[in-house]
Length: 138
Image (cartoon, rainbow, N blue to C red; front, side, top):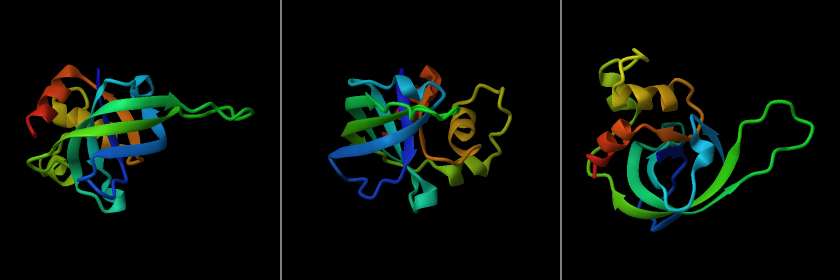
């Protein structure tokens, strides 16, 4: 399975990215070394959306805090950049056409749903179709 992460990315040109205790949703907690991940610079932190593709070199689940009833699984990951995006894809592009029919099966809709319906930063699992769609941006 391929993954995507939307978070603050200060230097999209970096060779290596380290993200600590990232929230996971939609299967994101299963990310592991060797997995492909698409990196989105979070617009809430001044980013512009899709910036790079990389390979996970390390992934470690964060232990849950004892005594808290509801906790979102979190992981820390290290990613080696493999390619830089050649064209933009972010909230702005996904809002040009309203990709809000959550059942239409389109890659753009999957990204809009997983990243922007609830705008928190997170790691998410991707369908094969959406991973192939994102690969065309490199």
